[in-house]
Image (cartoon, rainbow, N blue to C red; front, side, top):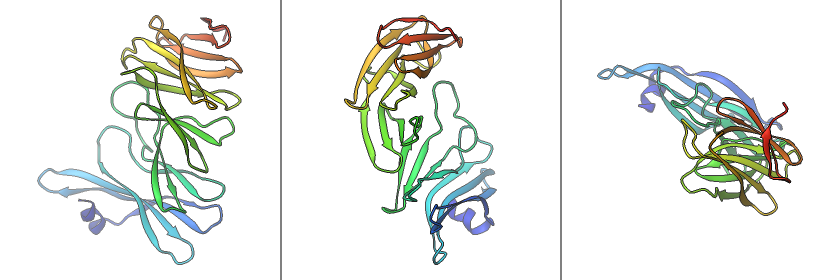
Length: 248
C-alpha cells in the first residue's frame, strides 16, 4: 500500500529542519489522501521523515507512517528540535489530534541519532527546568533521558497494575514526582510518588481516593500542587507530609 502511494502520488514537503551545522536536513514529506484499494474505497496517506545530506543531496528514510484518512486519534510527523551539537533530531508522530477515550496522555517523542544512524522511541513527558533531561513513561517505567546523550535509567513504578499519570520536575531538576491511578475514568485511588535522581528509588508519599488527583505541578522546593477531577487544587508538603487546600 505504501509503495502504491509512492508510485502514484506527488509528495509535498510539510516542513524542513536543517541541522545546526548545516550538514543535514530533515524533511517531513506527505503523500496526500488517495484511494489505494478500489474494493474498500478507503483513502490512505503516507508520511515520511527523510534525512537529506547537504554535501551530496543523498536521502534516506528515517521513519514512515501510513494513515487512514478521516480516522480518529493522533498522527502525523512534526520535527521538534535538533540538539545543539547536531547529534540528535527530536520529532513526534502525533502532530495532529489526540487518542480516543479519556485518561492521561502526552505527545510521544522520538529521536534520530545521526552518529549511530538509529531512531529511538523516547516516550512522552516533561523536560527538566534547564532543558537538559526528559522524564517519560515507557510502558510502566519512569524513564530518564539526557537530551543530548544516552538514556539515564528506567525504573518501574511501585504500584502493581496502576496506570501512569502526569510527571513534574522539582525546580532544581534533582527529583521528579508523578501520579499513578487505579483507573482512567474515573481515576479511583491515586498515588503521589517522588523519586530522587541520586537514588532512582520511587517512594509513594500519598494515596487518596477522595479526592482523586489528575494533575501535578512542583512549584516550590518542597511543595507540589495537585489538582483533582473537579480541578480543585491541593498543596502537599514533602517535609511535613501534610495535604491541604491550595491557597492559589
